[in-house]
Length: 415
Image (cartoon, rainbow, N blue to C red; front, side, top):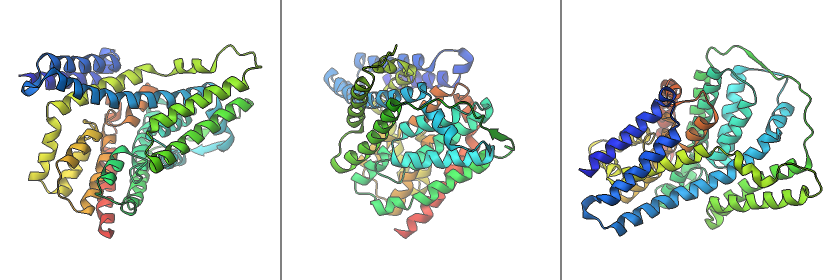
């Protein structure tokens, strides 16, 4: 009886996310409520007669994942909040961009930037920076939705071919299912699918974007120093993660502390009304609470055994088609526990099939706005970007995802 109740509550939670702009109730509030309620029910009426200690262990594991992501997000968003408030990113954009560029060219430029940046950094940082660049252009809401959609897909596509770019890619690599040379074969289909999506989204865009040459603010030495610390933190995170398996959260928190210490030193003689640590308060905490709620819901889904149903799909459908469907389903279910469930099931697939599965779980989450960290971040940053408005882009996204998947299947023949 508990399982149907949990599934009903989760379904209601996702429906409330969809109709957020109709009921005007923040999605962070609803997901947090239903996420915690599901776990309370699991404690009151444990599944399969499990003890409260077992449920506590399962919750602890879920909370550890949430805390790791939460702390990482907090550190990354503080960096971006500071640089945004100082106009640093807008300054760089106005210095680098020409005085005029077509909307179509800008679409390809943004897609390429998001793709490349997510390849050398994490998805969250790449999304935050890419959105900051686009939002500095003061675009029409409908056009802004298209740019944000491209950023989400590009960011998810950019990291799929690197073990540092996507958690699921790393999991599949560590399980010995694919090698680094195998993963590099995904670069071509990934970038082609991004270019295809940029082409489709830019159809009908004929206007020119004019960058008004405003009086550029002088870039302070402190701002440059913090920007350098930020980029150094990103690169150090990549190196330490690959070389020594240091959790990215730990490296980013260390980088944040370096930022605080350096700013304290550089600002000691300045008459400033705001302390550097106060920029933590500028973070969108509703985004972080939304993350907590969603991951609690996903954790509850895992406990009631829903994820095991995905592994059974491979018993009835050819792995090549099953992986395509699992990629689409990962837009509604977190791809990390989904990948873990499939790896534990020890499903027999060829290296080519594991390669396409890697692409599917890495990019499939782009199909829904709540299907990836990039989507959730974008939804919190762009007011016009809701579950419904993003859903209107679903046909374009499906075509791009299908093309990328087909490309991954083709490239897998060279393994």
